[in-house]
Image (tube, rainbow, N blue to C red):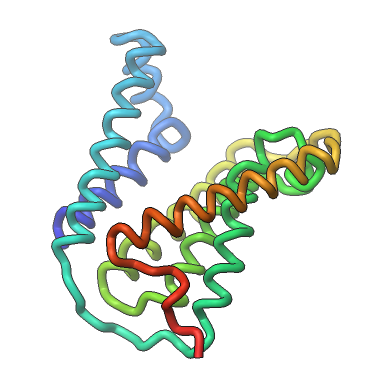
Length: 190
């Protein structure tokens, strides 16, 4: 559990550093330069992901709750929405222009989707921790940056292309999950 919690903590710290303690980030930029400072943050994020994976795999089954029947369907649909939103902020389409934080909203939906079908301690810590981070990140950004200026809506064509890419990425993610023994189509569907 320690590896998982340290990984989640590092993820939160690396992402919130710039906004909550800007003097530390500016000091890193002055001492190392902007590129190397970003490189250090990227390495901390990579380390956090590695620690989360190791910690998750080490924890084993520690049931907290039993997922409700039918949640596998909800999970799969929410995952498609999540993957789409993760790309909607940068694809120049129409849907992303309606949301201030499409990527963070995608992370929240991803977290909720996984919590619907995983009732053990490790998934609750991982997905609850990252979903909570996304909520806090939205609140911090909104507080610091103030009023949001909505971008000009892009084309539906770009959203259609993104939807196709999201479907392909979903298939790839489902396949990778199956390699690790998590068949996304064999969950709680009854």
